[in-house]
Length: 262
Length: 262
Image 1 (cartoon, rainbow over the protein chains, first blue to last red):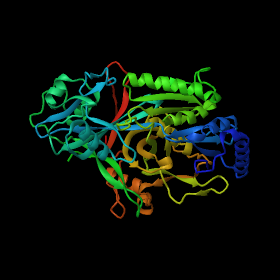
Image 2 (cartoon, each protein chain N blue to C red; image 1 turned 120 degrees about the vertical axis):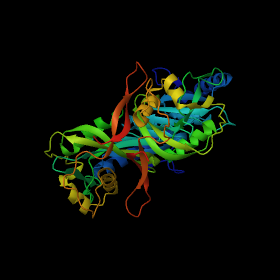
Image 3 (cartoon, helix red, strand yellow; image 1 turned 30 degrees about the horizontal axis):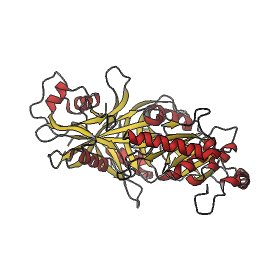
Image 4 (cartoon, each protein chain N blue to C red; image 1 turned 90 degrees about the vertical axis):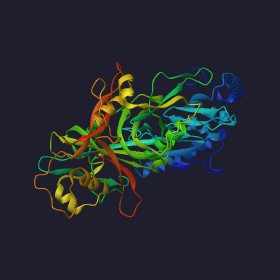
């Protein structure tokens, strides 16, 4: 990759001739080495060079903040095998069941602040992972930010795979089981219109959230219209436990394995 | 979002005064509506306007192919809450165990074509999800492309969550269990140096791939140096089955729940 973001590296946009010469020389060298693709990184202040490079067959690979990365596939007869920058966003929710058999649920605000109105639907608190966060870190952070309830991560219960969201991306939405350390509710008033501990039986009989209901049916055996268990366990029948897996001598990464609920 | 990619919409880069006037008017209108952010979409041929917009506080949100999207956070005193374009790439592998108790494994090529050499390590066939693919679709496609073996999707076995990969992204790597429909091997010679059906006992005694070994230990109870089960089941003790979950009247999305192996 030719990195033009280092100071003094990029020619001025007005000097597109100099830039094109440099591009052409680099492409020739890479083709001589039988490389498959050529890459350039541009600072936003020189973004005009992207237009110049596009005339030479370059396209955007990705961009963020103050830079853009472009590439050109160097084998016209072969399929372009450059992986896309990213196809997925990843979110997680906190499933918090307290010892009284109540589940922590929220109603979000829809719309903008001026014309916002509470959602009709109760749902689990949660949100998107920050870069580098584990599911446990993200879920406990989001639940605390939205509801004021402090929790500890226990397990992953299930995950949902959806397509066609914002910008055409796909979405992975992971439901984590968290244990409540505190129960006092203190909502984020900009995001959440209401928050409460709802008895699970009330939830099952009055709500129609398909993901939460399917989770309760699959993992607790609790179904709308069926006899409700007297002493419902906080722990589900099955869940995914975190195991640290990595090559010897390197730091481990969390890996999630299905196990019987403990 | 002001979309400048429609034909005739974007001013010429030379007319940056016209562009700045339009930006400034739009920002004023959005602030009047108490909106939090302003967005513009530019065609690559007019990428120079990104440099102009950056002087007004815009930054890249993302870019792909022939366009870039930029935004400006309109509330200087408040935290920028615009979600990043995407934080994750998603890959999947096929765990294929045949009725003889052999596992399908490959060695990839490392390096470029000129200086490529076979990897030392046997691993599972697999690759990254194409946009819109389910895990079953991606895993069966990748296994067929790499090894020539046709398979059917059965379940998800586990998933791995890693950070700090290419471009600073995170990675979710999902191991799927596939059933072999054919067993004849026919490798993709550009990606795979070797492919074979390896008896599971040989794998466990001779290999050190931590993810595959941890999967065998957790889901089949098979561990290096311990007595090997005589009649090993193809099916693991636990796995994640696909359930379709969605709001009533809308198409379902695959959701993965842990269940005892069937």
